[in-house]
Image (cartoon, rainbow over all chains, first blue to last red; front, side, top):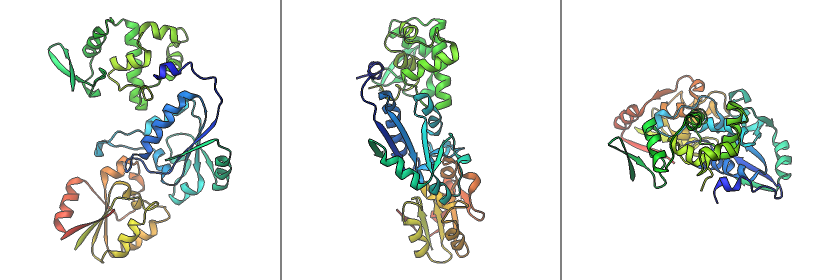
Length: 131
Length: 111
Length: 100
């Protein structure tokens, strides 16, 4: 089925989907795969949350320049998520602190949550996908 | 790898006709790709193609049709940011077909 | 001496810790790929690297640092090298021990 056919296909039950990103970009393929799944999944118009924890927060680091490693810099694509109606981006506070980072170091606006708050958020989901 | 002939040069494309190397793109290639689809590019086509190239430059992604429609509406107004207008220009699907002429990959999520 | 390379993030793998524990004083340690996250200031493992730098020479591969957008946060005393520098280091040392 092409996406252009799926466009009109909404109308089903809306579930809460949560994607959890815990890997750094470039060293492994997880980050890019997750981003593609989020973008494809956005066509189904579900209630999507995207969580960045552990090394996953490195996916959002500002100032990435991949020319020297000859890989695609996909960090600008996180700024397109809003246009895909994926607006709930969460970052774990503890993960930021362990890495000496703050939300200002990230390429998109996020909501910073504590581990305890994330526990509640995850408990509240219908589907959790881990990358 | 398949190729198309553009002014005597063989340009590499994938099995669905999308440009193999985005860096190869120029307007002659877009015109030739459209000709293969029996489509003559008007100013309105070029406006969307140019928009897509700028969009890709900024976000490193070929937008889904829903996102393209919304983004065009924002930039060029509601009389252009709607499915009817875009499907009339690009009957094979505005995202897929326009992305092809713009030298972009097929939009993420299109099978 | 051996050239030790680490290509895993110190926050998700024990590779850097093992490398620091099992490399001799005077040896060279090169952080590459996700291993470059071990080269940064203000993290929970920064002090481990700073300690190691008292007796060992630590390098990080600049293209990997830049790709990850962390060029402004590299610890003082870490030498950034390019691919040619990697080759030189490998040639200068007896062998390469890759901590995978």
